[in-house]
Image (cartoon, rainbow, N blue to C red; front, side, top):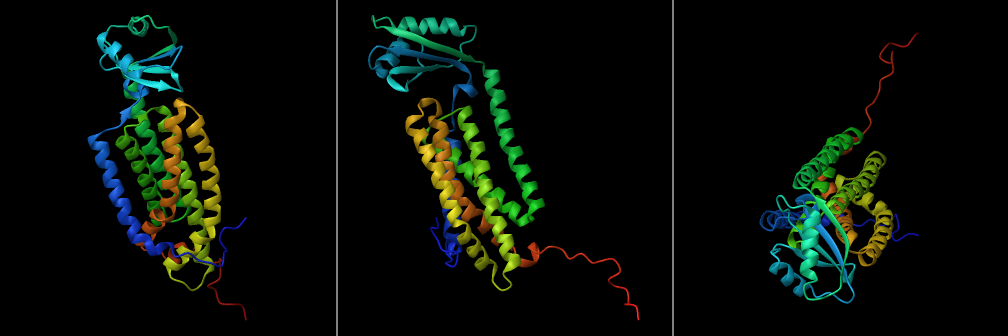
Length: 313
């Protein structure tokens, strides 16, 4: 199936200055959201008690919050979990109080008005574990970016390496900015999605760079911008098909997957859209801005031993 003829070239780079300005504005906005709002860390990172309860009928979240506040759980976070009858309650750590005791106190408060409330599960995460997860998660992303920089520099060229890492940093910052702006809970599943976005975006960028290198060596005449446009046009069919099929699966997960993976699906959906955009405009534009040329990608000529000797008479 072909969406675009290979003989037709789309002038993607015509918009590269506009898209760079747009990306700069979005990055500044994302960093501002991260600095002002900060991420809404999930229980995996902050530590505390997670309690899931079930009601016979639709739960009144405002009434539950009021009952917990009266029981000295003012900081409790209450939300529906999957259905209107299932409720998830998050409570910050209490020094010297076990999770089982907190669970009993919460259950007593919820049953104070005679309602039938079923305890589904209680989970406790210590704050020390949360600190370690935050540190290790940030370290994992940093190591991933450094390894990618080295790999692309060895396989292609250092200008391409900086272009690919710039695109990945762009994708990560915008994804984190989305979660900070809308205060979507950031837990371990979302961190896994961010790392998956890095891999997806890199794969897309590598395909584009591979075609750019091939065309630089094959097309004898042509400016770098023209060759990049040709390469992006030739890989556009593959990009559309890959992104579309992935998005279809993630849309199904987003609407039908339940609350547990809602953040995961959100991060991947947004990350794939941003990753496809950055592979076309950010990575290629940075490589062009750094002055990539045909000479940088031509394979080195290997002189044969004895080629400089005079031929025998």
